[in-house]
Length: 548
Image (tube, rainbow, N blue to C red; front, side):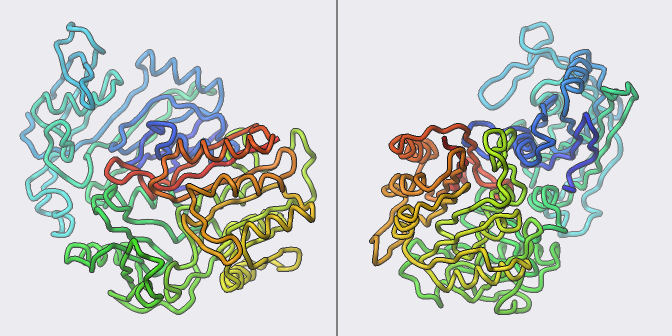
């Protein structure tokens, strides 16, 4: 169970949306919103429908419908305004003791909404505000106080009688008490917009029974940590990104949780604020130690010693240690130089292999046109330490893992053994990827799934230099010839400067030259713990395609 889930039955899915996550993707190649992420996660959620929305920076109770009956019923209830909604907000401005009702029309002006007289055109909106109790932040611990404001805050209950975009935020500002953290509408800066959908009451679409769901809020909690923990089952995973650069307010700084230790990365030594934040994260996640690694654009020229993370806080990790991801055990090492042994941004894609579910209406194996084989074959072309291969093997596949490095393939074999997977029936082939693709084609070996996740730049004695933007088409053409009819091709790149449109154009053009047709397609950016923003654009681009 995901921590964000409040209730699920045959008709409804009720969740506690974390702050910092859109309700739905703002554009086709942007980061997934909560709706997109959920809908493509489980087959039973494939028919999820959005009934209402919360702003990206607003947390709290949301309901999705799972059936046509629920969709019709909830849509009607929201349209008739019979749904009761309660929000909580913090403000550091003076609030009148009596109830405040704001009625106006909202008009969009760029990123903001403007409040106009009620009959001046635009969408009519009405909100009732009621002061609850003083929340004197000075009484909180100094660490927590510094995360909010040193000024006294008050908590207000807001009941929107209509459901317009930014309605509560605009009306609170109009009433003279803008929400703490809502700088778009004049609020004092804070780590988050302190607005939370605390309660939702409606009639169940099947039984007609009135139901109320609520979600508590901890204003002092770190919103970045909550975003990660609400979307992660800690029984199944203890490795994910905690700070993703400018998207989390730390330009150029990245921090990963790797089980019992933290890995910090940036181009400079740790600053005093970064060290303080790292210490706080260690306490939050009960980490034993924290390492720091210098990022350099000339990573290929850096020695292994220069690229190896250095212990900066706490206890040293063992030379090899194990983390959990999607319930799979993976061996990592911080003594290997360039990488610890797993790329965390591919976690959701590895899960797709485990579950056999790529996206809504997109099963990994096409049972509609082909009977499910007793076992299916997966080719992992740039296998590294075989994370994809392990997940495929646990789902019943026979895997073939190719990598230029024999040492990494040996590491991959240890990952198989960590998960009690018998190595027999699985192949580990060291050598040049293009050379092996040519050899497999000559042997007329075919696969149900082929995975392409090459480095942005690599070099081998056989094929020479590989550059993703220049050579990806050649790679796709070579792989497509090994795919069975209705087989699935996974293509991925982390070339940050390559726009998603250009990447997809290259992949599709290469497929067309092979005479094959794309039957299904699902594009996936980086997961929610690698949030995308204007200040921290997306870099990871992945696409799953079924080819005929």
